[in-house]
Image 1 (spheres, one colour):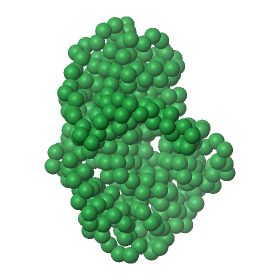
Image 2: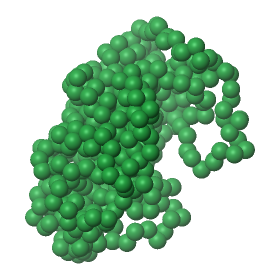
Image 3: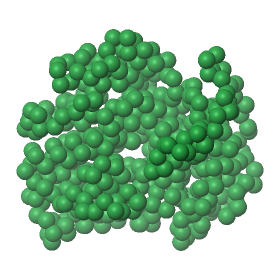
Image 4: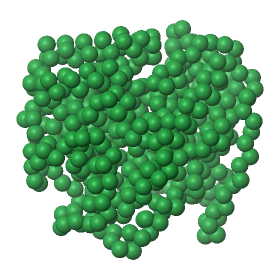
Length: 462
């Protein structure tokens, strides 16, 4: 399920999926449709800087559905960009939050220890292979990336950073310096962090005509050329990569490429950093996406699903590396908030008890089979790729030229929302639909989403 390329056929004219009539979960009596237009209310004061996929006004979420202020429900396959991996108002997470709020809210990291923080460090470390055993909690994905880059620079004494074109790692200055999934993330912020070298990512479908072996060889050659002509390997402190590029287009890194990066990093004393902010927590059908390649990074950055919506992130490495980083070398005021960590404990317990990593793999296979059936009748789908419940659908105007069809994706995203399904776009040309449902999604919900997607796509010209 790493890559799937399909060939052309006439466009679909009707759906193979019957319409699903689901029972609407009744919200608590205290939550009633208000009809509020929050966009209009926010106009004078809320920042226009923040980009939004939709201008809808949201009221509440229950299970895998988000409700607007008119009381209409939407099957949520966006999940705050892969944040609510267990859906909305998950009972175990909500219970843990309420119980912790009554005990301790204020972060105490600078003054000692709080039980949920310590327990989550133990439980989270247990999900990683040896020697990854030490956890530093922070607030956001960007902060985790910043901290990991600082860790690598200080422990190696080397300033060089290698990252990959199309990667998205965050919005803070260091994270922006290693981000190149869209020009708007970088424009106007130069000069950025020095010593960053952006190399080609093996985007197998888009850049290498589906040839994974050639993609791996070409991109590794670029790395070896870099250390021959630009910076010696002994000057590189870190190599940073997403096992599956997120914002850049849902491109999986081929397993041989990741294994070669691991070998190169080990040979030259370079810290290999895996950005698992979107790919982690069972999303790809393994607890961590790097496991698909059979490697162990030196540092892993985690966020998004870690607390099912509460702000929390983490850096995980072997203990010796953080000991060399040094006491007081990095810090945080809010990182490791007790309430967020209590939620994080509930998330991990639920993933284990409900076998959700396995569920992500099984439901992802069902999703891909359904998408393949749609693509067999619609030549506008050029590629279906990903793993588990992190699936990208790339839309093109022509399968031979692969000309991106961003306009179709924009219309499809809006049309699906009108039909009650929330999906998001990604990719440099905004021509990829990403499907990131909750990892406890049911077979019926997978079928419902496929039906909406199928009918909506068949109704759109172009």
